[in-house]
Length: 218
Image 1 (spheres, helix red, strand yellow):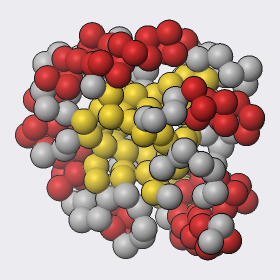
Image 2: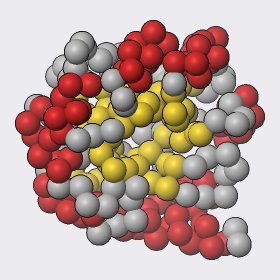
Image 3: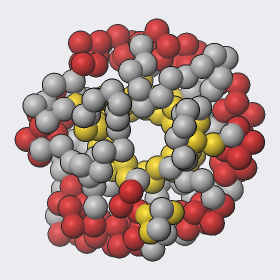
Image 4: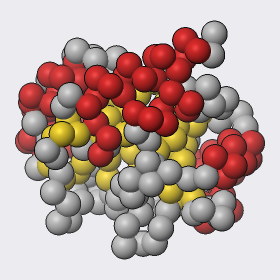
């Protein structure tokens, strides 16, 4: 099971991630009034410092011609579309040579508005679908709360044959059991990796618990 840690803003956070078993780091871009949204120059600086994890630009409403041009300057391949991005815009980003992670907004009843366009997203070139808990449009992610397991399992079944990640309320006490969840290749974590607001020592506990969960499944 791979890990993505989201919302890095400092070089010392990147340095910690470089020395952990983390596959991806999320760098927020163009998110109005978001405390972790980065200016382009800062994002490029952090991306260049990544020696282990692959940098992922996370945006809600991609503006044009950005983020493609900015990402090319920074040498970043992956973009995560965290809002309600249309299949048409996904295709435009794909044409810019980017790899696409599309967030699917799922509520506790298992309802997901993007499922009606799933075939269109496939055709547009989505590489990975990220299952995340949805509350309302005022907070479309980063809720710190997990979806019911039955909802996640149902989504995995509906999305069979696709690359899937999972986000929402993942912490040290739950991550070990998620290591055994079929169909999920990576876990996307933000708040549980932080101490005093910054990525730090809690990350080590997350990695340790995840690997223990994987070993228990052997």
